Length: 165
Image (cartoon, rainbow, N blue to C red):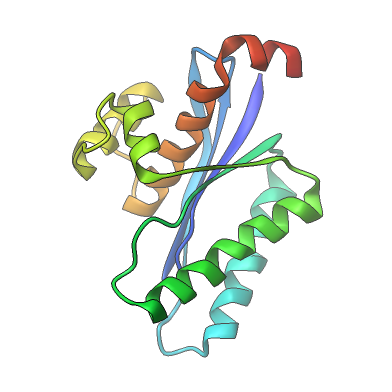
């Protein structure tokens, strides 16, 4: 079994989710979101993301990190902030020696739902179904992070996962 940490980065709420997979069957190990306060200085928000996400990996093992790629931002300032927030999990992966894979929202939706323009609720329902969870994972950012991890599991396929064992 391989453990994949999926990350949906943002400066306000960074979702994370660890799944365990054999390539065809997946189960959720842990998921949640790191919430920051918009009134805090931005560098303090980044520090909280770094500290909390590092803590997740101190308590739970992961073999691979999959991160949602930047796709769209309302303006340049938002894009820069998102870029900074994305840098945090990438830094942590480098520190922990984890390979990193990045996926666009289109790739994630296609892998999880089978349709790249799927609605958010469709993705969340499929995450619940694929992980055999009693309810849709909350908050939304955690469900999105689990979708990123599932996307990577589907991209790797069973043969590559067997090689890694």
